[in-house]
Image (cartoon, rainbow, N blue to C red; front, side):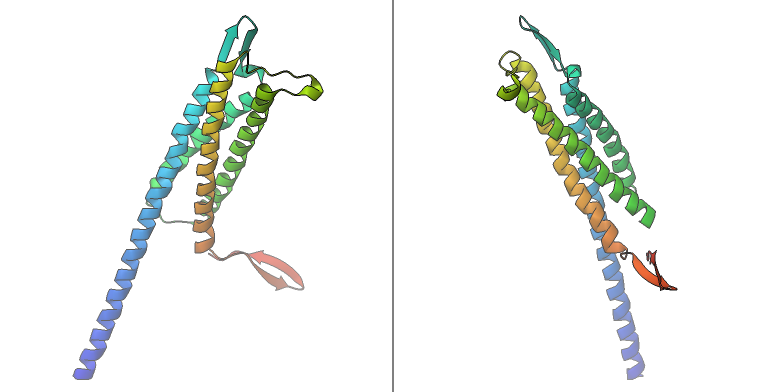
Length: 204
């Protein structure tokens, strides 16, 4: 009887440990999901703010007039922020749903987060270069500084670009999270030699 009781107690203890481990995993998953959802929502507001600042960015004075539409880099910045805002809102809604993770979903988030990171980074970098030329000019090409005459325009452009780089930082973090969720849950591709030819196989 004592031996049977010991086995039953051990089995009960093992079951309790498994349940506690599962509860801890679910708690960690819920915390990560909440953090990821917030981090995906944050760029939505930032992108809209950067977009609106640039859309309303124009100035006219005795020297002439200038608007964001006159510069291709600034138009690209507006389009990139618009795409990013839409994707951020959609991905936040999907990430907030407590659905079981699947490999296609993990790969989709990983791929799109990487793409958006580079799109927004390119938009910020191109706009920063144009703003630098407007601020400092370029003596080699006799391009004079424009910000002295259109200071308000340059200030608004600077604010929009600064917000865009905050979005880039958010997406770097999101790329790390989606990479972790993908490569910590699913094995890396394995190669199976078939008749001397290596064939890539995925294991979930």
